[in-house]
Amino acid sequence: MSTTKKITAKITKKVTKKVATPKLDWSNEHISRYNAIYSRFIKTYPDANKETFMIDYANPRTGLYSWLEDDSGYARTTQKLHFLTIGRFLQMNNNSHYKTYLLKGNTLRNEIDKDEAENKQSDKEKEYFRSQSFLINIIDNMKEDYKLMQYKEHMRFLILCLSTLQAPLRSDFYVSSRIIHALKDNKGGEFNYVYINRKTKRCEYIVNDDKVSNSKYYRMHPELSRIPIEDDFLNELLLYSIESYPRTFLLQVSWREEYDVTINQNTYLNWLRKITQSPLINQDMLRSSYVTEFYKTHLRLADREILARKMRHSVETAIRHYNKIDDDEKPLTKDELTLDNEQLKNDLDLCNADTKNNMIKKLSDKLYTKRRYDVLYNLNTKEDITPRQSTLTKYQIYYDDETNLYV
Image (tube, rainbow, N blue to C red; front, side, top):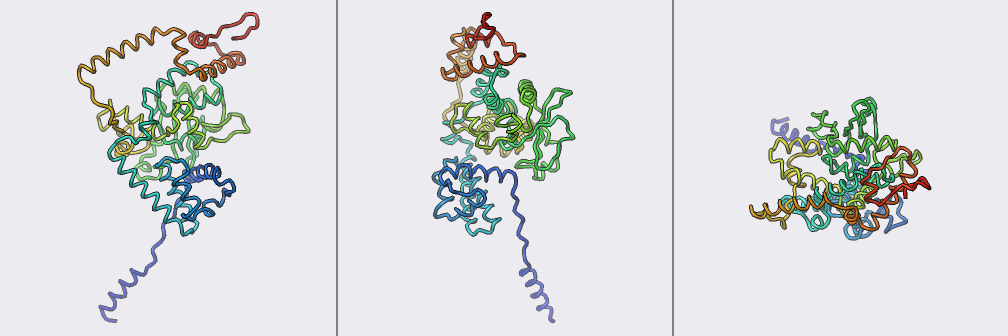
């Protein structure tokens, strides 16, 4: 064979060599999204079969595609994730429609990235976003009574504290986390944990499975999977929560043994929206709120890198996706800052001088009535609770010597 023919044969062999198709991953995050899509999809298509609905309704002309695009009620970011999840599922099941879903998901991704590169809040964010000061004010108004809450209100309060008092993680960590009291119970792999150290009375997160677990950086730094709880009140709240409601998972609909299963993403969002009174707030907004506030007072790159590791993303991601600029917020002049500080001081003096009637007005009538009922219920049914005088004053509660009950 001539030299030319040998070279041609070698090139042909290289060209015709079969390229291996990369193995597609189907993670716990995909499973969670699959379940979330189905739970909302059956409200429109009640006959849909959970095991096969993505295949049965895959045709883009009708069914799943048009529902997700027009009628699902999902925000654009969630739509993006769900289109990509459906595309992944269809591709893994050799369904020819998968490219249409992946294309739509990637189109949405590009649109979102373009908008977020400007660091501006969307119209939805402007309406439903809540600042750190707003969220902390909710916590401050509730924290002194946290031992008097009913279980479900306690869960909602816990969710808010987890994502406000500590650098917030993605919601899939919270809804998947199990409670452990010994490091030997850390099984690694697909399990996430909240570790309660009985000796030191401190808590920490152990993140084994999240969006970045398999990235090169986090594989090379396994120590970053452990994140200590730094806020003292959050630590105290977690200790109380696990001791008062012993359970397997961090977040459960009920702590009773027969309900020993974690909540889903929809329940997480519903509880978050109820306690913040923001109908479409989501975990990304909480992460954005935390980063935006942090960046106002932490200009050093080193500080921002530390925060990024706690939140399990990069500084670039934080700057591009989470640090938001409010176009309506204009910088104050020196005179305006002086007046603003004086007003804040006056407001603080007024807050300190609040009477019980003023405190009551801070709560809506419906919420006040509900909390007063819960406080009374706990005081009269739990033997080991000593109420604060401020709580009794706030809810106009007193002890009746004749009935031996709080009324």
